[in-house]
Length: 208
Length: 411
Image: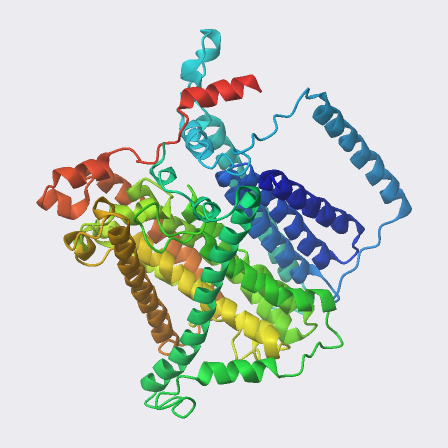
């Protein structure tokens, strides 16, 4: 008996991801949604690991599962008025969601089926996924401004743009910092005004 | 070819004993062996640390600690506690969200156990590691960050105000320590030029002067930033705000008892040990002793498989001893320092640790540029070691970039 563990785990993890994704949509408790989202994004990270893209899988775990969702849970706990917030989804929202989600699914399915032949993992390589595919190295070099992949381009035109992603990366970073500072400034200013105009005459800054 | 593909994996080794048609079983068996070994390690560490913590704290407070259960030193105290915890009634508060309440302890333990999958325990012959990853440091940090979900969900799902406060503190603590922790772990990675823990450990093989903590003054200081953030990441005093038994009853664990409580407990000790193993590999030479004893005794791959096995075993003992020393330091801190307030935690992590770590990163960068071999290599040049430090990574990807580009173009 020959089991292709690569395909087996791909199907298993993909099913888990889909199940959790459905659970996110169906659930009405916001913290449970966050939990299901952890499951879904974690399973997607598992798919990345399975494909040999370890760095991407680690990023998925660190940024989406570890970072964003902690902030989400933090925000829910800070802002919720009652203990267990529950969100009711109206019929109109369901209709809209089905239209948007369905059209995305249609596009993705069309893309998936337009590939003539998905390369099946060959008998042994399937058991040992491309463990050391150089995903992280090339990506990292690209981020600091070296594009080793461009060196092998035959056409002169395509070999241009050796600068890599350093400039866009920096521009985005600076942009994000500006946005963060602005958000912090707005949040602070509003609170100070609120404290200063309070009728009971408490000194500004006493509210936290 | 990468060096570690020269050695057969456990699955390939097992499959030589199985008939041809049962080859698929080899992977299952190999996975079970890895998981069983790591589970035994994590649980033994938890039980041993529990006993040890009582003894250490007793010694620090001029007491005796457990003395009766199982002979003179109370060896079996953890076992007795375990049996007691298993026989306790399983309580779920009426106000709790049952699903989250039940799930949280498992989530916590699974996250801290998953760290062990990427931790190597010896470096020879491809390394003793369940899954050798190219990006092991990154994976360990990412998975260690998932443990907070157990805490947050437990705090939220318990339906108790103490638990909720504990969970909120945990969330605030996570956003403050994660960045300096990652920055501090980045510095040894940069000096070693690899995120592969096996490679980082093997680089420091000449003796204690070769350890990354003594590489330059910047890595030395970085270790203390790492220590601070690692203690914060495992919620130990002085960073045990989510638990804070003198303010919040038991914080996020208030409503838990019996087996579910003991899962949190095991998760805490397992992740304490895991961050200590990481510190030992990143800063203290990993499985390499203070003197290259295994090499002097000839316990290397060049003297045959058995010698390499013995060398690896010696290295594993070395690593476990160093890591346990780290655990003891954490216990020492816990029973010495008072708890910080949440604003002090955020001040320590965000206002001090991040700038210090960033300055160390810059300093280490300059140092690596000027003296790539580190302090000792500058004083005592060593041609073979210089080649090792300066050379590009041994584990070159099997495909040259050209193949990658071709593959990309094909898509």
